Amino acid sequence: MLSFSCDYNEGAHIKVLEKLMETNLIQVPGYSEDKYCQSAREKIRAACECPEADVFFLVGGTQTNMVVIDSMLAKYEGVVSAVTGHVNGHEAGAIEFTGHKVLAIPQHEGKIRAGELEDYLEAFWADETHSHMVHPGMVYISHPTEYGTLYTKDELASISAVCRRFDIPLYMDGARMGYGLASYRTDVTLPVIAEYCDAFYIGGTKVGALCGEAVVFTKKNAPKCFMTIVKQHGAMLAKGRVLGVQFDALFTDNLYFEISRHAIDMAEKLRKGLEAKGYSFYIDSPTNQQFIVLENEEVEALREHVMFSVWEKPDDEHTVIRLATSWATTEENVDKLLDLMQDRAI
Image 1 (cartoon, helix red, strand yellow):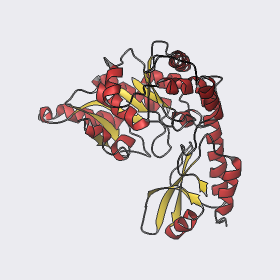
Image 2 (image 1 turned 30 degrees about the vertical axis):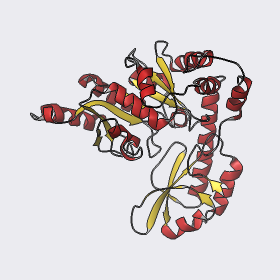
Image 3 (image 1 turned 90 degrees about the vertical axis):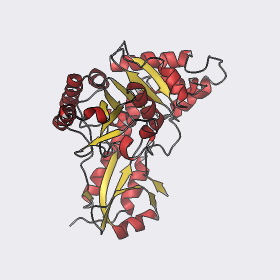
C-alpha cells in the first residue's frame, strides 16, 4: 500500500534520530531550559534574521494554535480566519474550547485578501452595536494554506499593514512552512515572515521531526508568562530536550530547507506525471499538496492500492483527492503511484 495521505506518516529524519540518540544519556534540565533548546533558539533567530525573537517549543500544531491564539486575545476577542482555515474547520473547535470565536471571512484558493479583511474590520467598528459582538482581536493565516497555496511577499505586506492600522497581531500557522519556503514559486523567506508577522510557528511534526513546533514572537511581544499558559493547556513537555534536540538538528547545515525541497521535488515529479497522463487539477498548488479531480469510481479503485485524503466533492460524479509528498517520499513510490494511474492523455 502506497501512502500519500499526509506528510507525517513517517517517523523522523535520520539526522534527527541520530542527534536524539547521541544526546540520550546526557542529563539536562527539563521544560525546554536545556542547552539544546537554547542552541536551537539561536539557530532559529539567525535563520529568521530576527535576533530579538522569543522562541518557544510546543508539542503539536493544534496545541500551538490554541495556546498562541488564547494567549494573545482578550476574553472578549476572537480570531479572524479564512473560512477554510485550519483553526476553523479541522481542529475540532479547539479555539472555541478556549472561549474564543473563530471569525470566518471569505477565502480565495485558501487565502484571505487584505481588502476584504480591511472591509470586515471597518464594518465591525462602524457597527454601533459592536459592544455586543465578539471583537476581532487578531488575524490567522497559514502558509501554505489548506489548498497548498502560498501568500506572496506583497500579499503579506498588505495584510500586515491592515493589521497595523487596526492594532491587532498577525499570526501565521506554519505547520508546513518548510514546504512553502522550499517552493520554486515563492518570494517569501523566513526573514520576510518575521518582518510581517507578529507571531508564527515553524512546523516540525510535518517536516522531519517526530513531533514539535517552534513558536516565534518577532516584536518583543511574547505574552506575559507564556510558558505558564503553555503548561495550563497541556502543551509543555517535561523532557523539553526532545523538542530542542530535534530543532537543533533541523536547523543545522540547512537540513530543514533541504528536506523540504526534496518534498517539493517529489510533488513536482508527481504533478508533471499526472499532467502527462491527462489528469485535471482542482487547484494549482506550488507545494507538496497536489489536488486532482477523479470520478467517484476511480476513487474507490485507487483506495485498494493508495492511501490519500478525500478533500471535497465538486459535484455528484466527481471527488477531489489530495496527494501529499513529504521529506521522506521516494522517487520509487512516486513512480509506483504514477504507474497505477490510468493514462488519460489524448
